[in-house]
Image 1 (cartoon, rainbow, N blue to C red):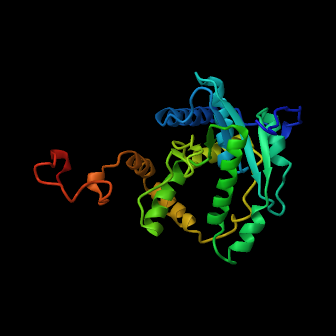
Image 2: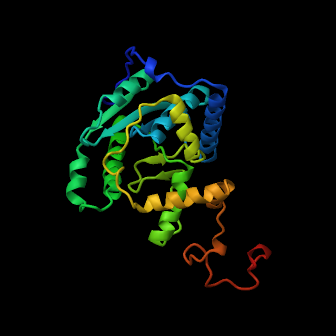
Image 3: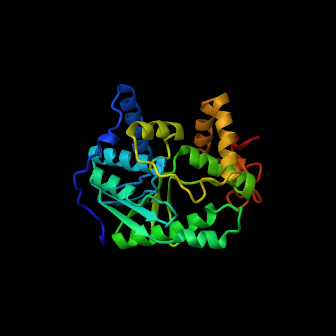
Length: 285
């Protein structure tokens, strides 16, 4: 692996002592259990894997790294973790925070410095959403770095809420029934991307990050942009959650139990040649 920092000097971390109450430990165990189930259900990590964790410095990715390191200690298989951060040269980005955090954990890490900030600011008109171009640039860089360091999997910090939001985002604004899969192969076929927190809820990860006192770095590139389409979906789902906390889980389970014959995609199901005799009892209206 090239240019991966592995040494962990002793640091004064008294200001970052995590919460250790019984309630917090139950929360941690619940999140580890959810992560473990997702990894097993989708065969995300196998013996000998080198998992590159893409860390932005936000709540989700910081939580993913911590939980995955806990799971690594308990897993019946041997795999490696490398934390990778892309320093996009946003003005005011505290570049010393993440290296210090990684060193405190004793996890191998790599910081990539590439000025995508200037590209995004130049290409995206004032007032337009920057997330699309920013994410494409970031994804391409991470794919390249994964190959350079010998990573077999790229772990992203998306959770259940992200996947549900993406489902409705694509339905409402893209006219497609698709979301974020727990595991996928990159378009070029050169990388496998996993989302170990597919079964974890946003609110629980927020509580976990607060308890762990992670040094969170907000995204100043697009974090201040209001009226994002994703923000609209988030507010809608949050309102649903207030009415019935089971609704979000039911939506996620529906993504796991798809019946093509009950939808309308002619490429996914052969409606054209379907005859009365071929219809099973469970396919009736």
